[in-house]
Amino acid sequence: MIAQHASRATAVGDTLQAPAGIQMSGVRGKVFTHRGEPLVGRTHGLMELALADHRMAVDGDLAARRGNGFVSMSEALLAEGEATGPALDAVFLAYRSPDLITHDVAGCYLAERLPGTPVPLAVADQGVGAPFTALRIAASMARSGELTQGALFVFDQNSTGWHEPFGRDTPVDTDAAVLLTFEAGDAGVRNITERRTEDPANALGELRGDHPAVPVLAGAGLRAHVPDADGPPAGAGRDCTSVWFALADRSPLRQPVLLADYDRVTGRLHSCLVAPSPGRVA
Image (cartoon, rainbow, N blue to C red; front, side, top):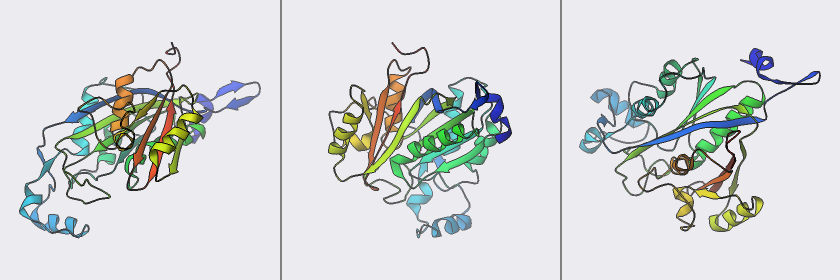
């Protein structure tokens, strides 16, 4: 993909200017209330081997548990969009809880399913910060000429049996997914930051001071500490997807917004500034 860099750079005098980062081109989410896929979709012997890696035994509860896999949630989001789209250079997957244990590998599936045979990259073990990290990687790829078009799938797979930091203290009866599409551009997604803090409310105040007059959209993890902050609509995702549902609810943007969420396991406040697409500013 590096060889394609000159074709998408902007000529400035006798030099080639690379894109400044990425521009968001679309965002949509979906909540899944029905769970029809087995948590462990393998035969009994393979199930035991898979769960042994997590020091868990096969029991009646796990064998009967149902959920929504990354592949099926991705397909549901893709079905609600255009049948075809631009060729993608990369597809990112971001999540806290892992996928259902099946023979399908979601990243490989999406690489074949999406136009352009994009390179799949998964970001995990960061809680709600995983989508922010994925966007930071995508922006770096755009600046280096490795990415023109990309997509990010964010998943809340809540039926797993894993304990914190991978799961939840209290059961959640829905799953959720968000699809973000983006392209190399004039840094419409920028200031992607994270800071360690034990006082997320105070850290949010400092963040607001860095971006005066910019509305803040807070994810579920941050709203637990700052209840009056604007957040996702009722019934939206509650973990990694929540702040991105808030963005979808505001789209198309007419002004820049600051997205922020707090992960209580890692103790980090994650944020990024998202500006409207060109021509959308009021």
